[in-house]
Image (cartoon, rainbow, N blue to C red):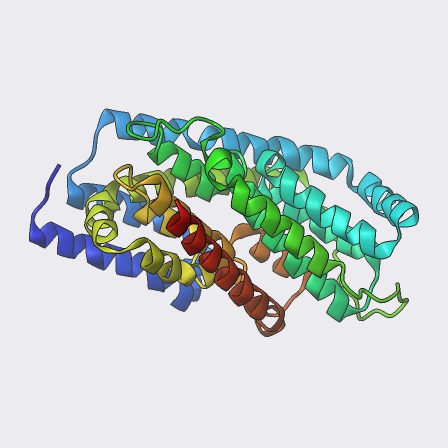
Length: 352
């Protein structure tokens, strides 16, 4: 469906609101789900894409991830003390550095099934149990959040980004099934998780008794768990609307942008939620190669700053990590990963 220039201009304004208001207006950031729902519905209206099928999709698509968050949250609440014991047991068996590397690997690779949200909640408990110097724990948390953010993209259960991308690509020409993103991205994501696991476990020092450690001791109640699942449901529903509404604008932009440019443009994900950007720019007309460039740019840069993805936000909130100290550790690591991934992508596609 083609639309006029006036509608494209209106969609560009909507896109601008989505990109900048959550970052610059505190109230919008606090009520992000409601804000995205309103602008998503507005985008669908402007582009004239309301349909019964779209409404049905917006109701059905969030069910899997919201259910996973709800069930996982209940199980996590019941198993919280066991997580502490398991961390200490792994540490005794493997030694501290190997234990930390193993924990990052496990969280990263399992996040696509237990969801990035539950993996981040577990991470907060793991860090509380470790009791290392703050600087070592901070590096561990940043690396673990990179691993969780990368690993969660492998299935539609993992995080809103993968849920919305799989939904948008389930028709022709990609016919994305449950493991489509794993087939497309695992060759890049699994080595990335292994890399940050090694960095997170490098020179970790010894456990300390000082209070200057990262810790989180708040016990969630069932109301908190249900509310979080409801917010995830509304968030994904809003992204379905936003993706459908902004599709005409995204089709125009992605058709003109070369793959390499899309990779670096998606470094915006450092300050903006990567699921929102994915909803706006990923369209079925994109090739598998362009989707790979776009998603890897989003996933890696999403770890650089706290607003970039869900595990960052949860971990920083629960462990009282400030934006500046996160950035000092995460930005250099992210830039190195971005550069390495970009060179590898260019070499691979130049070869083939």
